[in-house]
Image (cartoon, rainbow, N blue to C red; front, top):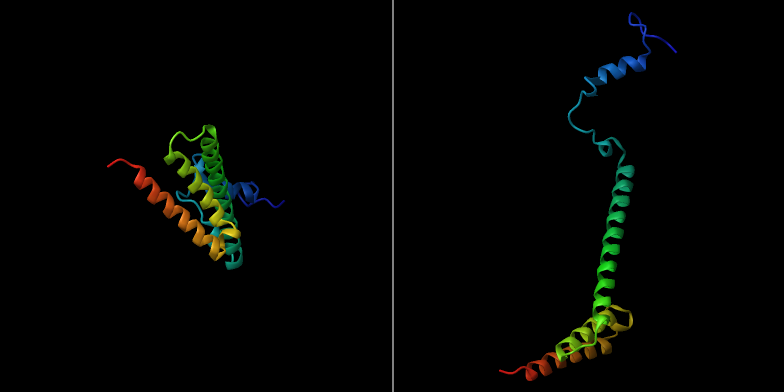
Length: 126
C-alpha cells in the first residue's frame, strides 16, 4: 500500500483521522443514503418498507381478531344483546367474503341487521 508523504501513515488512516475527532464523527447529522440512490433503487426501497409495514399491520390485526374470537367463544351469550353482537360479527365476516358480495346475500345481511335493531329496540323497556 502507498503511504502518505510526511506522516508515514496509510491513506485510510489519514481519512479516518479527518473523519473522526475526539472519538466521534465530525458530522452531526446522519447521511440520507436514499437520496444518493437512483430513482429505481429509491422506489424499490420504499416498496420494501411499505410492504414490511403492511405485513406488520396485518399481523397485528390478525392477532386482535384472534383475541376477539377467543373472547366471543369464552362464554355463551347471557342476553340477546350478546347473541346479536356475535351474530353481527359473523355476518360482517361473511359480508367480506366473495359469497357476501352477491347482491342477494348483501340484501339479506342488511335485512337481518335491521331486524336485530328493530327487535332489540322493542325488547328494551322504555
